[in-house]
Amino acid sequence: MVLVAQFQAFADDDAEGAFATATPTLRESVGSPWRYLALIHGVYPMVYRPSSVTFYEPREDEGTVLQFLQITDDEGGSWFALFVLERQEDSTWRIAGCLVAENPWQAI
Figure 1 (cartoon, rainbow, N blue to C red):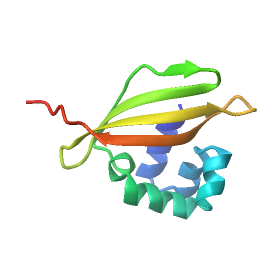
Figure 2: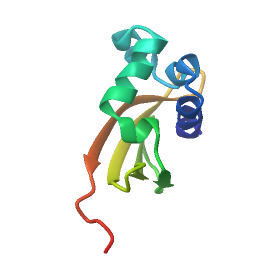
Figure 3: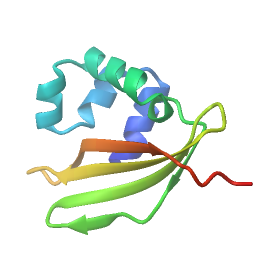
Figure 4: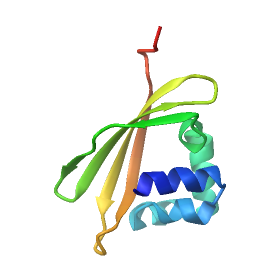
């Protein structure tokens, strides 16, 4: 799965590997693998270095998949992430975007 490949690339600080998981449109807007890695590291540190990730069942609609995740960061914070995946002409899936919000329903 493309998200697993992206998380592995982040864990390895593999800018080119992480960049390859993005759609061509997203790659073009960011510009380079190192800028992509810096963007994720700076804006989405919980995605860049999660302590744990829980995948929920994806939802597909006309060539787009929404993948919902729950992420725990290294400080114990809980986050919701919604990834938009798009099928490419070669039938591979690439990441088109991500929304992240803090999980206000922390476990007691």
